[in-house]
Length: 272
DNA sequence: AGAAGGACCTGCACGC
DNA sequence: TGCGTGCAGGTCCTTC
Image 1 (tube, rainbow, N blue to C red):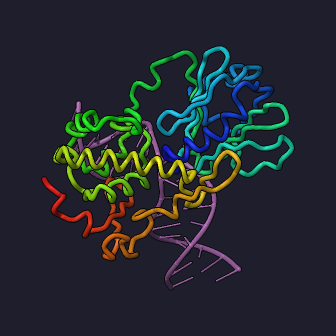
Image 2 (tube, rainbow, N blue to C red; image 1 turned 180 degrees about the vertical axis):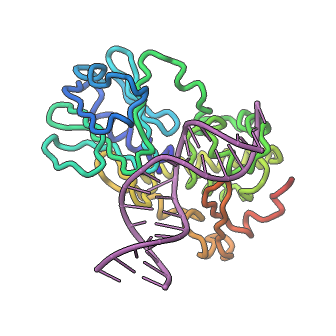
């Protein structure tokens, strides 16, 4: 579900409400979503103040007054919302952080998300690729050159570039006029420059629209995003292309639904 | 080592 | 109405 823009929206919503406040109590309804499994989360969090809240890739980073950190990943269907302590709990509520009057609640039906308590370990982010916003196209090019996979598949590899998911990969490739099947290593410098710009532009516009809500995604206050109304290809199979009036096509690439315009992203851009 | 494919979960839309 | 099927925004692990 939540890709970079959605996670950024959640973080922006939570930050002013949480930073500087203390976790009074913790309730853990599904211990199996916490890693490492042996960690005593209640002992680690209870009584601690949150001194910083940030986003890294698709993860929400909590920094405590002990300088220890934990990460929450929303998986496909996860939501992290602020609710009154007495508000009724929805099904699949797995974690509740009581901040005194309000609670941060983690709800995740499919349980692909989770909480990683990493403490003082600074190596947790080592395997994550660079953030796409602010990435220089030359650095992007170096990373793409290393793989022969289809560019669509490469964009989803979080060790290559971190934060892009299925929606924004399709949208960016459309804007860059690149066929999703093109081998990453075969892209020209011009194409990579164009793609880098398309990724950054798409992500920035999506953040401005507070993310894409297809079904589950909600921000910290429970509100839906609006960027789904601006999708050019994602979820539009069979509909006319906004650029050429051709028909948007859906294929499966790397096991994921992939949407593109065969005309605008035609074979001419496909090599190898 | 890199790449491909299945596994992990629940809920929903659709067709019969 | 009810059941079976396929699909979903993501990652991880195994196999080749």
